[in-house]
Image (tube, rainbow, N blue to C red; front, top):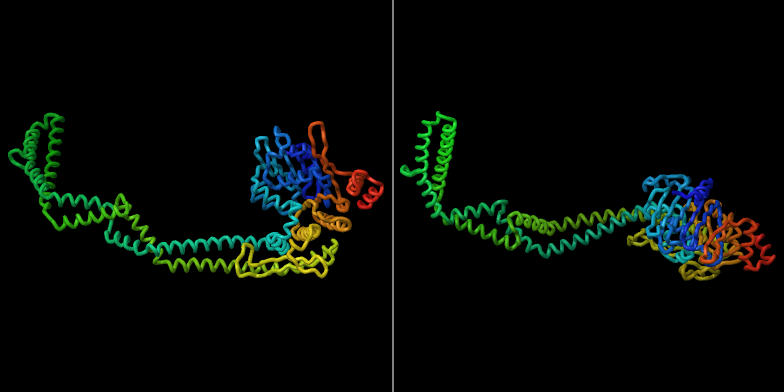
Length: 566
């Protein structure tokens, strides 16, 4: 359940998204609770004070995988909670889809237990990391120092252009179609291989099939043939035994039938004396009827028995054919042979219907390709339309960031090939200085220039995507002085329409914040603990003065700090 202290912080009504953060027993942090403000928030602290720990804890709330080694006291669980004001961000459908209770003020909680097991909750409902990761994507964009280098990454460049162009829905449609297109192509290749294999075996399979079809096999056929063969092959013995049986039953002197009739004549005279004799008389009568019937059938069977060498030979040949087929196909019975016959029919059919099957598969691929081309054309047009606007906006921002001569060139080259994100190649080029040649982004810009370009891109993206909160981890790398001042102004302007949090070492940027937190380490006798506190006005002046001149704060540094805050 939500901790008491954290609930108190959470209860304040605020228009910003991330309203509060609580971290307990994580890395060097024992227990911190902070309330975050609207607009532009600054976080400062000496190198190694624990700013990266804060980002790591926040990453857990956004769905990053937990690391057991990050628990401070392994006898206790680690708990990280974040309060988010999400009422204005159209997330009800997402909560419904993920089977979560929607709350305007939502709390996300991650726990790492002493056992090493990790758990995640949204409004006290357990969730999978995949769901938490999706939700985090709607809430916060954490820009790390490493991400600045991604400006030279083609995938990131596409992502920027497509976000600004509003291509998300089209790209989702395209990628779904692209997966199906790939699947159809794989099936076509499999079909070709199956047909090539079938073609190689066609003559042999057709021979085997004809052989089985000519055998005219039917279920139960083998048993019938074997029985008939035994009859034809034993005519003499059958004649002898059947004749003997008929004679023994019907002979007048010792015949069983005549003897039973005499027994019946005697019993019929005493049948009326008691029920017992009546029953015996009836039973003898039944035997006589049955024996008489048997005698007649034996006689009929005897009449049917005759030598037929031609039928015997034909039956034997049929049996040998079936035995040979069973041996050839390793079949136990007729039923298995019939199954093999069906399999052969299918294999032969593959070859005989190869052209029609291929044509059908190729038609499906052609239809899928046409659909992809139509969607990719829309994606291309959106990209083409927005690129000049994006280039102009970026160059204007860079001018304000001390790069007045910087020129950005983005080339969009249509391709025949269907790629995973359309049919375009994209190239970003930069000429950083007046009269300079255009070079690939990753080769043309220094670290400080990349930081400024990334800030320009992020500010445009933020306005386009309406992301609630963005966190910059040292976006100011490689810049100082007046450029840092201008970067701070851009970040502050961004904070007017969204929540912006910046981790910085530069006082020029720190002075622009609406609120300011300081992360620091505190040593006790046995352990070092990371803490964070929100600075009041006087504390902010001292912090800025220290950032300007070091621990020995001069009056000029204090005056400069006041000027930065004003």
